[in-house]
Amino acid sequence: MLGRRLVTTDGCHVRLLSPGVWNENAGPDFFNAKIAIEDQTWVGNVEIHVKASDWYRHNHDKDASYDSVMLHIVAIDDARINRSDGSHIPQVCVNFPQEFYYIYSALSNNISDIRCAPYIPSLSPLQIEDWLSSLAVERIQEKANRILDIHSKNRGDWQYTCFVTFARALGFGLNSEPFEMLANSINLNFLSRHSDNLFQLEALLFGQAGMLDMNYHIFDEYYQGLCREYYFLARKYSLRPLRNSVWKYSRTRPGNFPHRRIAMLAQYLYGGFSLMGDILATSGDEEKCRELFVMDLEGSYWETHSGFGSEETRASVSLSDNSVDLLLINLIAPLLYAYSASNGDYERAEQAMSLWENLDAEKNKYIRQWKGYGICCEDALHSQALLQLRKAYCDRDKCLDCRFAHGVLRKAVLKWQ
Picture 1 (cartoon, rainbow, N blue to C red):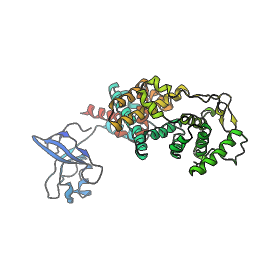
Picture 2 (picture 1 turned 90 degrees about the vertical axis):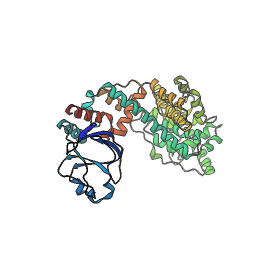
Picture 3 (picture 1 turned 120 degrees about the horizontal axis):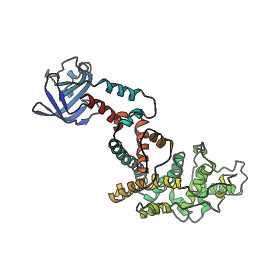
């Protein structure tokens, strides 16, 4: 923002060679900055204040830890400052144009979801594309780090890591947390012991989900059978179910209730859970990835039910194309990236990013909002980048860490300079 060429209050020319490292703790604001004052190069610390007199108000003149400060930058030059030994510190007074303060105030005080929306049209396509590319990498790394955390907590077991991640993905946002809690509530080894019996797998999963209670007046032979089977298995493995209240149903069609997703999870456990190996075998190929989710509930209780005792004559027996897209985006790509990060396999990391590039952008209110502000979004790489921007920056009021807001402010400064 300040530019690379500055002038001290004594008339000396200053060139910023390196800003150093921002210090978020006690002490000078920037460590190990490198500057040139006239023909002399200096390496040291930099302190920033609104008023020069703040140096004395904060008692820096009596603190030896500030003796290493080689440059003081202020907005109001109302004092000449010295170190604790009385030596003078060069000082730069910076004044920004009124437009800069107007934009900064607008970003700080705006209560809209996207504060910089009025200024987005002024950004160049290169600025937008550059920031979105970085955000996409940030997004997949964030997802991968979450997966690697699961991996480390489970002694490096990739199959279990995949199971938990897959369960979370089946929650499709609304029930992601409950599905992850469900997967963590039961040992995969217990489920593997019953992989040859789909009914027992369903009993374990529905029971752990807190959806089975014989005291409920559900006079359904299938339901009552699941209850009896779960009570037997729960005693055998000392299991404790989740609270049924963790599941969310608002704004969800009956065909997308969590019951049907749990039934599908049981289908993937039937015959042994091997999804991690299957994902690695795809090498990120989109068609091969899609084949992994050709699974349906045809012929089962769930073909005609969305919940226990409630029939749904038009219920879908398989995952929709949109649901499969979301699984490729939120499950396969992050898993491939996480696996590559843990093994130094950069080729798989590229496969994960390429998968996002080949998939269509998600269709949700956030993406529609960005499109309304003039930012095109043609593939999942860009839609994931925009979701990262919204959730990690806009929603957390981190405008000054965002290249869009930074670019707008910088443009105002360049006009003035």
